[in-house]
Image 1 (cartoon, rainbow over the protein chains, first blue to last red):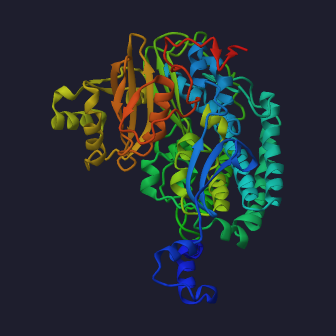
Image 2 (cartoon, chains in turn cyan, purple):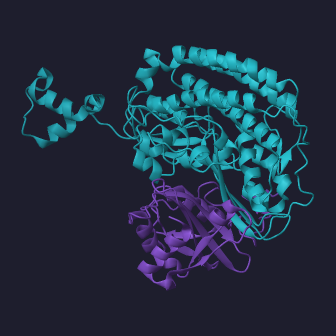
Length: 411
Length: 167
């Protein structure tokens, strides 16, 4: 915080002029006008960052009020990628909504689908075959790694490290290849259907997963050496954008942003869905041994640990996967998808946090109302709170550490 | 705490008249838990209720999960508050219903920070005014956008800023 007093020039300048500066030695000290004239004239500047700016991770405009290089206030302007998901959902049948769900969080489309189909299955009380649940959890965890790889890579880029980004993308490519072999798409899958899946697991995927476990553990160590414990990176991120745990809970933060504050909260553990209760994994939380709790470094650290934990879950899936189970993955898909009248709030843990669906059904083939609790939206709303008082270069780091996807913020 | 105990605690503090408990009779256990709600009789009491739910030690609803708004299609709008206690691990859903004309509710932004953007979105999409909100602007749509698109009677304007819709 020393930098703040050093940049607060007027006070220093004033004292300097009155006591030491020979140029002003003759000026009368008691003249109030002189002090006024001698003061360095500064005023706040408003700077628009975005909507087209690589560090805003999409189309986000930040109206930044600056005092020199210090951030006085940030006003996020969102909605540039608003595609009326909720209005569309009211005009579509339940299965037709799934491709639209993909386009919300396009970095982690599998996780979004998983949340949506879980919600509708709960409304219709559908029991999904065990094999389908295994494939879903496997893909959701692979998607978590893929999404965290982007988050870690771009976060490195935001803080000045380019190389880790390329290593992250190399690993992510393997995951996308597995998805492509199984579902036919690389980004927007329409893979998880209500009650089942669109295709059975491709024969190559499980051997590829075994190979991936080895390479990904090596990459994890590599990224830790290159980025996480890099001195420059730690200097750049530790103690920046500190969020208090109580404020985080009150402000609706979730996912790595909440866990970085030291709050052990994960929907996979606290409100289990699918078959997550069968697997043994740790909830990653921030650590005050490495940096301040709740700062940008810890948000990245939580993602690094989650990556490792996801690999552990995948390892357990590979051990337990029912190899001889020949169940058709579409066997439990209902012929007519018509949830009974009622409402539900169902949530799952995506790479960005708690993704919730509030669905109201009036017993029709189309939902009456679908409202999405988007984790990126809630996390972004805390940006002004945690970036006031830091430098504008730190604002980029803070924004990168939140890991927003604008498709999900704007819906 | 199980939901019926939470409702009993609310009723013992505010009286039975505060609202009625609508229990979901779904076959699914999750939906019975997350699909039941307390319908608040008078929507202006929502602030008192919110303060009570957050500060009462046995309830301690420290997290507001979501504020949703629904057009019921019969001239009324509903605002739904999904609350959760991270300490006790229980959830509660509140529902406040009001006429669509001049719909307004007291804001809970000073109780849960998360309500800030959620209420702005409810105003933007459903046209519900939140009295006492510190930053009452639209959030996703343009400031001069005509109407509230998620209302069931919303008609897309033929022209927007002199441009034909759909262009």
